[in-house]
Amino acid sequence: MRRINFIIGVVTCIMSTSQVVFCQESKGFDFSSNWTYGDLAKIANVDSVELTWLEKNVPADYAHQVLKLVSHLTMPSACQLLPVYAVYDGSYQNKLTRSLLDSLFIRCPDGDAGVVHNASLIAKIRKKYAYTEAGFASKPPELPGHDPVVGNNLKLSFDFGPAETILSILSSGGLPYDTIYKRIATHPFDAMIHHRNQSFYNFPFTREKLANCLRMAAGNLPLDSLYRLMNPNGLLHFAEVRNHLKDYRQILNSLTANESNMLDLVKIRVLPYSPDKIIIDRKVSFFFGQGADGWASDDITGMDLEYYKDDYQTMLRLLQHETFHTVQNAVKTLSKSNSKEFMPYQHMLNYIFLEGTATFIADPNPKSEEQLIQATKLGVSLFEQATKAFQDKKGEEMDQLKTKGVQQSGPFYTMGKKMTEEIVVVFGPERIKKILPLGGIVFFKTYFDAAQKNGNKSLFDISVEKLIRSLPNDYDGEN
Ligand SMILES: [Zn+2]
Image: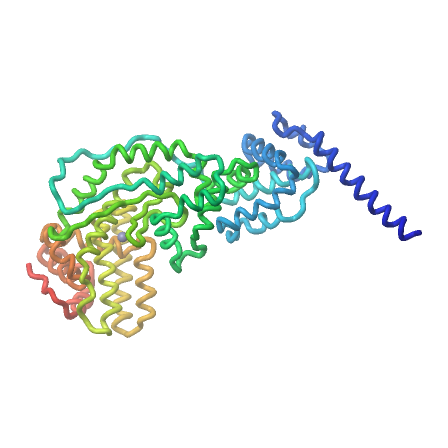
């Protein structure tokens, strides 16, 4: 008998608890109203510390939006699904927010107290992400005027297809997963996935990942909207694009209207330094997507628009820089000389040559005069140390110094730009055309000749010049 009583007691208890919960939900606090923190403080079991934190740290309209959306869930504990969004887009790996996301997994208080609890967790997570509201000036491109570009061997065009697909999915208000999956099953998206799968990406793209993040960014369910409020740059940046659909639509319209003008400006900058014989037919495809602002994979050259927004000047510089790399690739015969012993050193010279000349054509991250001087100085110092390491047969040390010189468009880019400037001043653009297929050793030798002819002191110590001049190559740097 006692056993039966106990069971009946437990059942009664469960029933009464669930009745209480149901009651609280049906007559709950109206979070859609124009509430004050005084009103919230009267909610049963509400955590006063969390309330005070919200009041002091979170803009009122944000707090209203989040509380309203959490209250629209069937139960506040549905927020346990929010960290799953962060698993999909990879941001769960972010150490700054991991413990707070884990807190969302813990069962929250029932009813209105749970709404406040989860809203404060969401607001705390939002504050951990470095994100400022996107800066759209909404201005059309201000590009310099120019003479018409006469017949040339450089064919360039824009492809807006991938960006249009993404904008159309994000404006749809929520398409089914398989529809999105099929719409991104195209060659340009394959190339993007291919690019983002290289070993230096910690969280590689897959079609499943892209389709899921697009679905969540397009969705209008309270949980979708809550995640976008919690991580406004999340879902591979698609959350941000969704929040600024009109701005991005305007940018695509401006780019369409200015396509031939922008591409002419690319040609005008690149053609004087490009060998006449090569033929280039190149399409630049616009995308959105976290991980890279400009990239090339398979036969696709991609630019991810959310990194530029309406900064057309930066876009133009990047187009000029990258187009020159295409020219270099078309003429490349860089590694035909030299022994195995010299190869690692020659590779470094080639790298400085390729990035230095492309940075001379256009520097995607322009620097002040002072920054240019400092970066060149640092580049020369790293290069001289790397040369010494090479002479001392310390290959690993040389590699480390090279990495310092090149990472994040580092000082070797600026140093190579400075060397190119000297060559162009002394020998003219024709000389760059001529040495383009010949590689880094010839580039350095030509620079030494130019500095000598110009009566300028070389950037490098004489021992470095002697070493490089002693390296064999197929071209003697004639004047
Ligand atoms: Zn480059």
